[in-house]
Length: 189
Image (cartoon, rainbow, N blue to C red):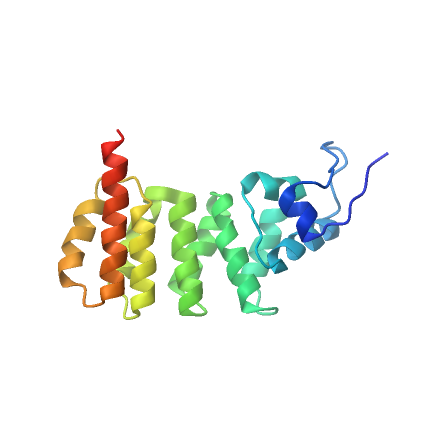
């Protein structure tokens, strides 16, 4: 007999809910959807790939549907978009690249850039590099922060060159922070 636990944000985020580990008896998709939406709507969810995986096998599809849908709160759609970083595969990459190419808002663009960098590493470099020249300083700032998380030898010279031309103090600060992160990583090798 399966144990049942209501999919509240607290039980999902803290991992308290005892889920049946049997692959033969996964949670129904609607129960997974309810659990994912509960966490997406939580005020300060603490999620990672393992916590999302415990919800069930359909989480990525539910996140894609939520992120690409036009209904519901924009903050929930942005959170779903960001959580695609935990599914570094072709589907998530396509959704994130699509959100970068045709963002619904500057916030969606910033979230997609960060998720692409976090989930796909150096594969994100061309997208991040292109957005260092975006007209919106907040987007340039997000691209600079995300670049600092990439472990790729091409990032340092790119940031150093752009730093000299960047007019926004906030973006320059993000670039300096990213360069410091890179220097710390290089010293620890």
